[in-house]
Image (cartoon, rainbow, N blue to C red):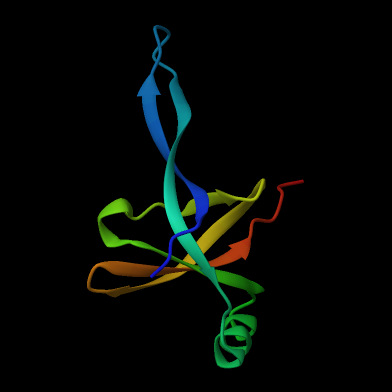
Amino acid sequence: IMTDEVAVLISCEITTNEFFQEVVAEKGVEILCQKGSISQNEFFSGGRQGLKPSFKLVVATCDYSGEEELEFHGKRYVVYRTYESGDYSELYCTEKKNKK
């Protein structure tokens, strides 16, 4: 598999400051990946769940640690489903909705 793209996996870390308030800090890790299309079946299956599947990213399984969000080409996405196949994992992504 040719990994010719870069994505940033985003994880959140909760710490406590000097006032004993919880502080959420995001941490991003760049990984190499390959962008792929989703199948028609995946698109309709996601639609039934209220999702709008965008694409899948194929990444090295050792690079993925269960992160639920990622940034790809300057946009934020949610990983709504994963599929592990040996050395590689598929991350199925949908565009993150902004909170209003």
